[in-house]
Image (cartoon, rainbow, N blue to C red; front, side, top):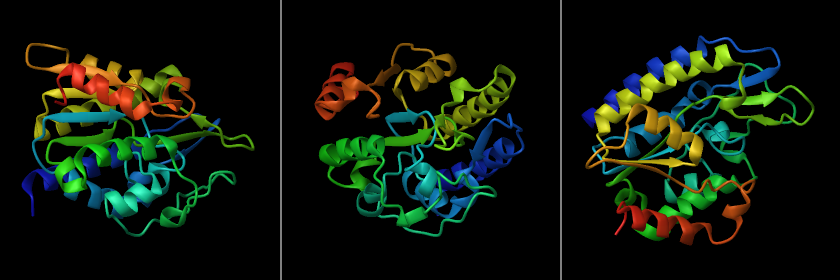
Amino acid sequence: MNDIGNKVVERTLQFRSQVESLRFSTDFVVYNPLIYAWDLHKQYLLQYVNRQVDTIFLGMNPGPFGMAQNGVPFGEINAVKNFLQLDGHVGKPPFEHPARPILGMDVKRSEVSGKRLWALFSDRFGNAQFCFASLAVINYCPLVFMDRGPTGKNITPDKLPKTERIALETICDSYLVDVVSLIQPTNFIGVGKYAEKKLGKLFPPQKGRIVDSILHPSPGNPQANKGWNEKVTDKLVSLGVWH
């Protein structure tokens, strides 16, 4: 078994316990897919975060119809099944928001951000093995936050109360540093500005190191809803990350 992959899994188990021990405002419902979707997340790490790479792509936290459902970063269901070729058991969080049920591999709704990101890599590399020979994709924060209201509105980590946010970010920073020390990328690309900010804080730009971001693929980002693939490809080529 791959040594780097095993070390990433071991560190992620520690990370899982650390974030699970945190306590958050009763205003939020919190899901930890590293627990109820661990089977798939572990498979993802062992297969695709198991070597030294040129580039790390960092997301913010799980989307409600992606990683929240299956434990895979940007886990759009069709990409998980067809491009990443992963399958496995997904359980349930201790408390489920009625508007945000966990359906695992049976979820029907597509996560647009993940669909766009994995389509970009599929178009560029053709298959997952070739893709992950040179890059890794992880999320900064593994937790899902939702409003307790009837819609279960998604809450991003930057909107947490300050003391809770700092406690969470301290743990996430440490995990990211440790994973980077194992996979040793030279290009640090945030999927959106939030992730770029986290990367820039921990890995400041220097000679031989690129720290930047790509346009976030969320449909909530108006700039992403036309020509996202082309815009991002042009950006990565201009940075020298892709040729």
